[in-house]
Image (tube, rainbow, N blue to C red):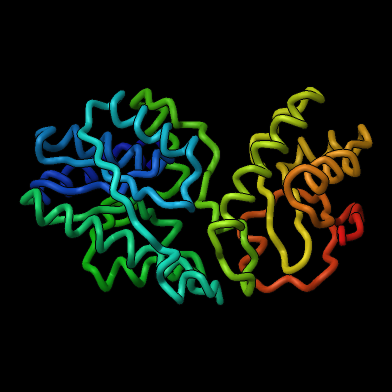
Length: 294
């Protein structure tokens, strides 16, 4: 069976499973996975049996919240913004390696309350088959404990299939880069605070603008907060351009002097690169690390 045929079969299975659920709240971030799930739910069910819910907290970049609202309206879905406060949870703030468990527990509990209030039996996430194969996904444990459904994974859809389906359905997120929460930029072992989340968002905006002014538009960009420094990560092509044009020290100095007040480095983007504790003075492969400010 060709990959296209497998994807079609999985899409049919997804629609069948959603139809059987009868109604649901979709945990909606506006990324590829949750957008495909929401689009599928609206194909399988009456619109009044589907709610797109976005958790609004300091860990969600304002641009991502605006994008989620836009996409939900584009799809014709009812969109509800649910305020959540993960920072009130000690385990979340401590950031010792299972932060995502406490985040998902807080968020999905709020979504379950929304579903109950609206007479809907289920909350569904955009978890897909690749997520279930990942070695470290503490958020999935929270979903299991709260009996949240995972229609994409249950239908056998992986990331490749979801992007293919997004293209087939004409969803404008088909090529959208991943955009995990701002807390994912804080290295394990460094407590998550409102100030750090705000700093990450400001720093990434500043980095994008600086690189744009120099003719560079990275597809992936993260500012990682380490124990006593930061690391700017960009996708491989952008990293190659930054190094070739001798911009590493300049962009690090710009961020250090305008937003971050500590030294930093530049490195190729790597998903989950701060999921383990990082020691002081870490520099990128290129060795560009500026001294800390007093």
